Amino acid sequence: MKSLNKCEFIGNVGSDPEVRYTGNGKAVANFSIACTDKWKDGEHTEWVRLVAWDKLAEIVGQYVHKGDPIYVEGTMRTRKYQHNDGSDRYITEIRLKELIMLGSKSTGTESVGRTRPQDPAADGSDPDSGRQPALDDGFDDIPF
Image (cartoon, rainbow, N blue to C red; front, side, top):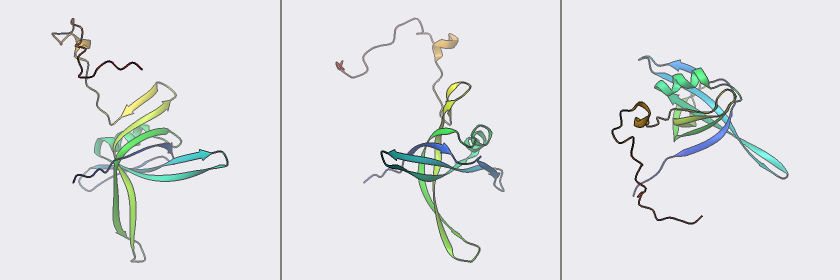
């Protein structure tokens, strides 16, 4: 039986991310976002701990700031560590695979950590660029 470990959140960054480097030079960024549910008589905020690695961590450190609305996608991980008093502690965090900046003031929506296929017709390198794309995508027309 297969399993799935995928988490998606939209929230506001709680504080500027902390970027550090491991002994072998890998970047790691830690930060949290606030995800708030609102209803007629109140609201509840859940804080979600996030960790980004490598290039995504460097991008987070450069572009993500306190208060920014973001979309994140990743996998949940729980790790064990020892507290100063010697007791075992556990922390659950989301290891990021994708981050999208929402509502950027300067350019609208920006995507970080997602690669988009380049449009080969844009640079003229696509020999079929003059042709219309095939409309047979395997789906019937659905009238809605």
